[in-house]
Image (tube, rainbow, N blue to C red; front, side, top):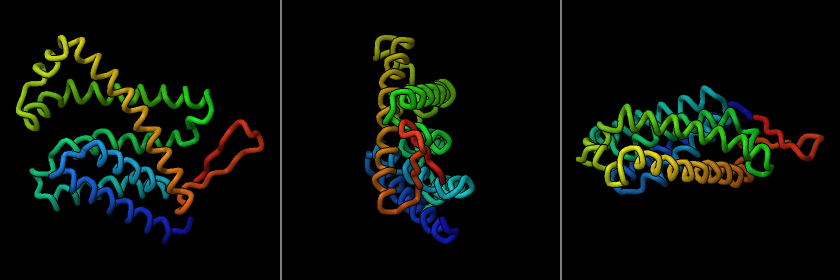
Length: 201
């Protein structure tokens, strides 16, 4: 891919991510905006790791300032920073794994499950209290207690979140493939062995 094309794709992906997060700061569509951000970051990473990192940084910084700072510290912004950004980096490095084959699907699912539960634990134990009080005005323990106790509540949320994360990952890859048919940012090349798919930048 030519450098000018890489820059163009990175800039457009960043702009779309910014728009999605900016809109979600005022409209409660954080799941959709987080999904869009992850897809945009993933596309930028296909142009190169520096492009992906710059896209993440530019998206978060620009969104923060154009929405007035405090307004943007919302659920969508936090999920974009703590979930979509690290996920897009991970997705770039495991892009050779997909859900078309049982073995690669199991490996990819396992990686995604481990990734999500690490992120989820960080959010709950490190930032959960701050997020619950600042964004929702309630204590995190109250939320978990409503789900039949702290331990049970954590497990329920972790399981539901894990299922959602697998669907999230599948949706990003599917959307990337559909867009790639027109944009050609993600070169797909089949190996001699038809049982394996090899993806190259």
